[in-house]
Image 1 (cartoon, helix red, strand yellow):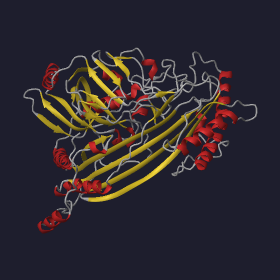
Image 2 (cartoon, rainbow, N blue to C red; image 1 turned 90 degrees about the horizontal axis):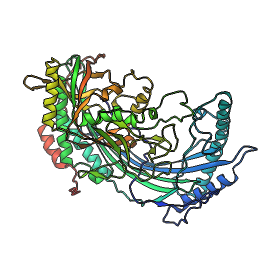
Image 3 (cartoon, rainbow, N blue to C red; image 1 turned 180 degrees about the horizontal axis):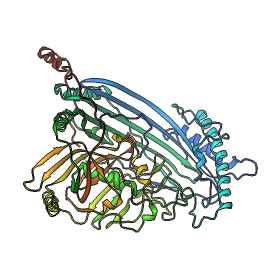
Image 4 (spheres, rainbow, N blue to C red; image 1 turned 90 degrees about the vertical axis):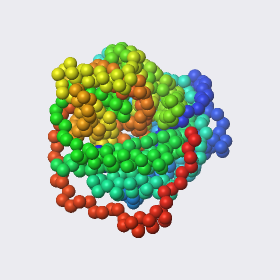
Length: 606
């Protein structure tokens, strides 16, 4: 991980609160409650009026009218601050809104969904702009909804006819329904006004990034603060009406050095919290920056890794990334409909089968706000399809019981558990526990014992893995490609902090230039033991953008056999000149200390 970047994209998620279920009259579009000016009146009035008109009057020739329509509006306020070596690189801020419309033609049993034509240009969809007015302007919102609904409806008709044509030529056994009918939910959560002091955070980014100036071995660094304040409005023809807000602040610090052979090595720390007040204090951030500076210099001087096959202990963050990259993608239902994957194996084919050792259990619970006093950021109440979020037991004693799912059923999953967000089924907050566990010292002794029994001179401990953002691909997509191809490898991110441990005296030696090889689903069954050190970690699904971050609560784990190979790559030519002196002269330092004091922060008692 030599560079860090964020995309400024719409961040949509949810906060926790109570739900009110709204009954729906059979055979009619549900009537929502009356809205007043304190309840986003113009937005929801536009939604109400255009939704009734679309369901009641939208019809083309002999083709059927829509049986289901949903409108969603999203707003995101963002602040992004980037800095390096005591100077700001960029500050981005703004507010954006978007609208999305879903139109389904047919019925719950068989509709237009699942047709691949939606990936391509459709001549009937003359209006595809999905921007939403920043003002709560009734006429503007209705006009956009009208045009989007028209285009989606015409495309839905075409897609339905294509699906019918396929069924006229091929017989498909046990084809699941197209859409799951759910109880409507009305959830109107309050919107909290959040004041972010961008000047304070700009000063913090400057001060923290300035810590890397004094170490001439640091060739690059990145310090990034990001804040998202998202609101989502949702309404469908079944009667669901939702308003959700999500707040998220992140802070990223990385440092890069270059070894004498030209290899670039990096280390990083990443924070993500729902509330800005939970972010670490300046003193902690400065200490972390100093630690990263020392860490990458040691990495640059560390010897290269040699090929290895044997036991490995994934400690703390490394264990969390292992679960995030190898296990979590197997816990979500496919993004493709059963109609699209009618001849392929899916994740649902693993239901009822053992995918992990018997002592491992996994749950996903969006309703928990903290773990052992540490705040969690992934909680929400209603998903993007208007379904109440549920706590689910995914893996029980090593056996896969269910998957995080939305309203598109498969042969194995026939109901939504409210985990459809950002256009796909996703995990929210994973809790990985072990029926039996050991202390850190006991796990380390077991690691060494396995090494001795295998005749090895040393064993391995991984303490930090690169996050997916440094890998350049989507973890979930990569893992989904292995189903039905049991021997294909799953790419696990390279270790940042990897140690050789002597089986004779337990002495540790930091190594660099390693990567994992031969990781498959079979590797999960080689988990020998788990520690009793469960903790909260921040990880991400796919590219490391703000809305992909989530929490994993998990212990360290010991795996009996893993292949680690020396990373073969083209290294950069070592830097010819030393880094220019970035440390100011003593007089200037004294002057700057007076004029540029570190920003004050309020004491966090939470």
